[in-house]
Image (cartoon, rainbow, N blue to C red):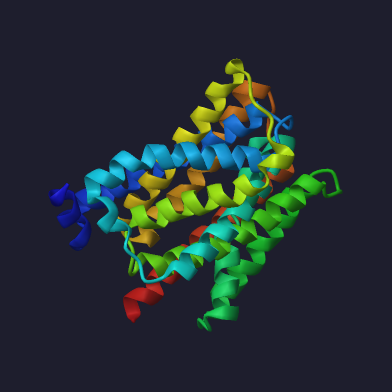
Length: 299
């Protein structure tokens, strides 16, 4: 483990960058699998229950990695408040996303969720006073046009679609908080506190929403917890091994995974509006990543 930590702390090389890209792609695949499990579980279970079980299982999966990485010492933090708000916005985002996945094709929700970089850019301008040039503003504007196209395939907006949009906003807020926490706390601490605090928040609602799943369905709850934990861990290390501007664009492979699962499991093919919106959102997001990387190189 010490050798891995040395690699992480040094400047990314070609090999570590390649590994980071592969880890990001694997993380995205696992998180898409988690969302497929949510879809398979269906609307018979409240999203807070799914979030509760997912957080409990993910925490148990994370514990051996945490112990191997240094045990309780690695969880030390001077920023409990930031961890709390990261968990709060992440929990709200998860619940809304799970609701959307229960009622919409997986691909539709994933396409909307790829607008996270657009929201992050806008909030960084509004709250962090970051200076953004006209080209990035133009990319954000075009990207939001793609979102509008993607969310209105029939000319109307469903409640689940609005949930997905708000969930995307919540996750954009968590991205900003994770960026801040990443400068002081380990990826394990960020993930662990998110899972534990999220489990407590979801657990408060269970007296009203809990429904014991039969053994025939329990494996899907276990699967989503394991996939969610694996995705979180791999993504954290992908961002440690390589520059965010290099690995983050590979998160768009989630669109391909989601549409493949929709076609294979439910026979659902994406509409032309979903494909058009996905192309516009992806292009805008990739341009924003590229411009941010260029700006960092100049500073």
